[in-house]
Amino acid sequence: TKSLASRVNTLSPSTTLAITAKAKEMKESGIDVIGLGAGEPDYNTPANIIEAAYTSMKEGKTKYTPAGGLPALKDAIIQKLQKDQGLDYSRKEIMIGIGAKHVLYTLFQVILNPDDEVIIPSPYWVSYPEQVKLAGGVPVHIEGTAAALFKVTAQQIRDAVTSKTKAVIINSPGNPTGMIYSKEELQQIADACQDKDIWIISDEIYEKLVYDGAKHVSVAQLSDDAKKRTLLINGVSKSHSMTGWRIGYIAGDAEVVNAMTDLASHSTSNPTTTSQYATIEAYNGPQDAVETMRKAFESRLEQVYPQLSAIPGFNVIKPQGAFYLLPDVSEAVKNTGFANVDDFAAALLTTANVAVIPGSGFGSPDTIRLSYATSIELLEEAIRRIHAFVEANW
Ligand code: PLP
View (cartoon, rainbow, N blue to C red):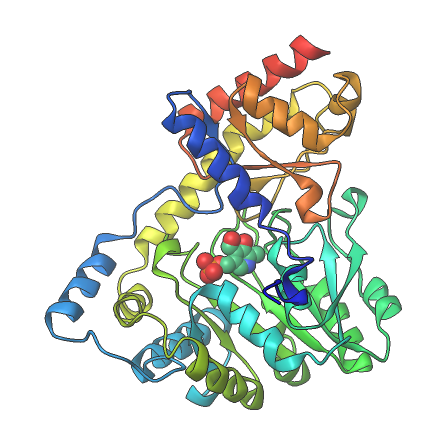
């Protein structure tokens, strides 16, 4: 019959995209909505990158490229990983795809057999469990509690490993938590993964967005073994404000990368050629825009963190990276009479006209996620509205 495949039966649409769409719809109908749902920087892509893309097109570089990406872009990524992380990779250990999201999707397709398990610390980025399920795998959640700053321990990973475990995902700096794993914590996690012989999928997409002197360390830097078992995921979406260009990559095991490249050769042919040329400039050109944006996010965080913390019933841990705040709002929800955080967030959108993402989609049902990738004026106004909304319903 014409019924849908069973693999999409349990697929839930991205909550982030759904709320953002609803907010956009309200805005278009003339309602003054402030969207704090965004998962992307509010800056345009730096001009030199746009210029490089334009030049490449005028030069006729508008055709297919190798499935795993242009050799020149692989070289730019290799240099970036050498310069920033001190990690040495060769071209056959790099594969470029349609954003980190699709690279992760392709990765799960090539490493998971039916019922293979992937350990996913919560709160997690919404797409991890869905992508694991789409590859026939089973997401196994371990909880990073608020008391543990939303991070998991090596012991939790050890306890969750079974004979079916293939990998654990580490996302540092994290979405939605904004938390960063220290070198020591990563070392313990790497040791656990070595003992249990599982892959470490290290999603480092927020690498450049770290605050208050915090340092990003890649787990792949910690030892030869850690490097061999780490499948490092990164891209230019967040670092260079290039979300729409759709370029991400993996660095790691050549056999995995080769299988991913073969799969891409039948599914995408190649990441958009123009975007690849833009990314070469993003990595080889001046990096000052990256630091300018980082500083702007940091100063917004410093400004709004106290304001958000002052809302009754909001318990907020100060994030160290990325551009999200993840207040635990359970007390506010209880005292305002809403049944749950989803209802609270829905009312916040319809009555206070502020769009936030309820944490249920992140495996964190007591929280809401606010993005501070928006202007300070809008942020402050949004927080004023949320504050008034809570007080009015208290
Ligand atoms: N990983 C995390 C944790 C993210 O938050 C995102 C984007 O929101 C991505 C990966 C995907 O980024 P992209 O596909 O734009 O490279």
